[in-house]
Length: 250
Ligand code: 13P
Image 1 (cartoon, rainbow, N blue to C red):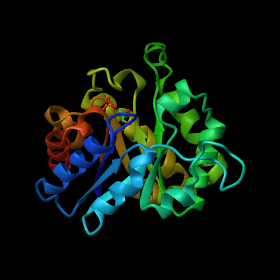
Image 2: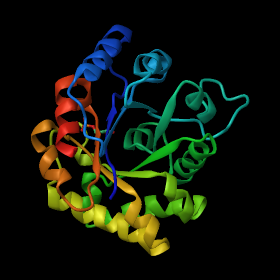
Image 3: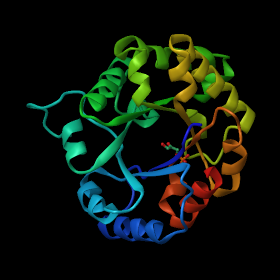
């Protein structure tokens, strides 16, 4: 059985004090079931402090991005081994905000995916279509293109240590969630594509849904057969919402 997961992507929100308070409130929250993994992805600069707070807890640390290179003269960048050093275990790669606002193309996303794994971290690979693409009937083609770029570069076996998040761009931060059946349709497509490469890896990989996930809609999404959890933005900034979403997945 696949272990479910809720990952909170804090994006560029908060300050040191609010980050610490948020982590403390999450840590004080109700016990999570053994079958669910909870991950928080704060901004880079707070990772080391938060890692200290998480010591001995079952809450796991992730980063929101990584450099495609392992080390060297890359001013402003943060490498996978640095993230591993400070206690991260997951890295979000190819988030739609990185793709659309910071010019990351499929090839760059694939390089970041591989850099993440070289550092011993697990990538959470984001894919998703825009509203225009959905309305033009291009959803399937876009998802397959984004996924295959990484499959071709990294190989099917790399998906043994990876997570894929389906985040329709039109649902991110808009309050407009994909319906459970819309999300399930794309998740089934992603799983089938990975199964075509290796049935065992496809059956085992965890697929997260992201895009306006809240405590009020989480249970309906998570009951779908190919939705193994959520990648949560706004709702992960409130401890009670995040904890309720973690409970819904358990
Ligand atoms: P929201 O949950 O705020 O829509 O953000 C989703 C997201 O982008 C998570 O990575």
